[in-house]
Length: 356
Ligand SMILES: [Zn+2]
Image 1 (cartoon, rainbow, N blue to C red):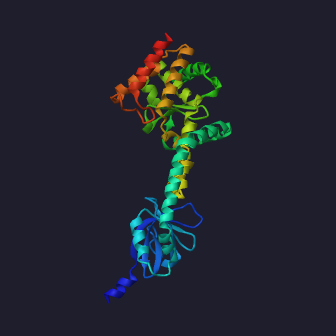
Image 2: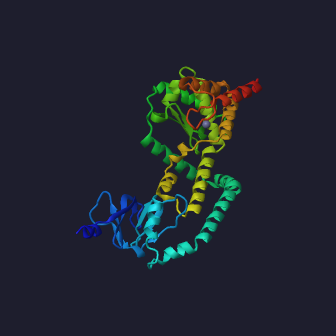
Image 3: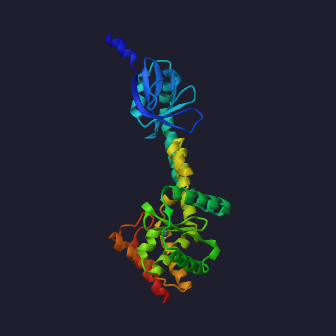
């Protein structure tokens, strides 16, 4: 009775993830077909199906590019898979049955396509003309409390995932801190407007970065790289002050959020991965500044160092150290956050010359 056994064995249609109804949880699962029934089997618990329906009773999202397809069960749970072809093949086999939505989908296909093209064009226009303006407005209206909460959340998640406490001698931390304060007193927000934190950088190595509320982080590795050239450290911190004063990180964040919003507009849904990225403050660190932003921060470093009686060329010396240490060519970058070191050194030298 080969054919009977065959009929009793569910056939795997596609692999993907299952999202229970009204839950942000998701689990690896497979979509299976047995006769006219479609079901989801969890990889972790292959026993009873997590969801089961008649094939005609589930709803399937339309195919739009490579966006994962969603099969919605009557209980509200969802199966999501990137395997568009398998889903199409499954429901193509249903043609002529009472699955009316398949016909509807095919009938309206040209109109759907036109709608998608229209939305993409609109999104392109918004991205080109409206987004930059919206970002500027958002930066201006963001309350300081929100910026502080964002910064605190970011630092906390980095402390958990990346950093460990600084191992620099206390004496050295105090020296850097007091020179930093003296320099910051000449900056836009004054000495109390910035807050310097020491951390052991781990995977991010020699680095420094600024959060939008004026929180600065300096890694032990950067201090070690600078060695006896304490001015180089100060030059880097002046550069980070530049990022704070120009609100670069907030602007980058809004730009990324705006782009995600556009994706949502086009795709109908950003997906759980997107939500995670947007709600995690550590996103800030993965955003790289534009060349223009880096150049503005370099300029502020040169000016602020000069104004506070320090060596304005120090940030350039730090870039030289980086190039040496990592044997970088002119076009390479330390981290993607600091692109084009060679060009920037030449520009810094020009600015320093102008100060003389
Ligand atoms: Zn920078």
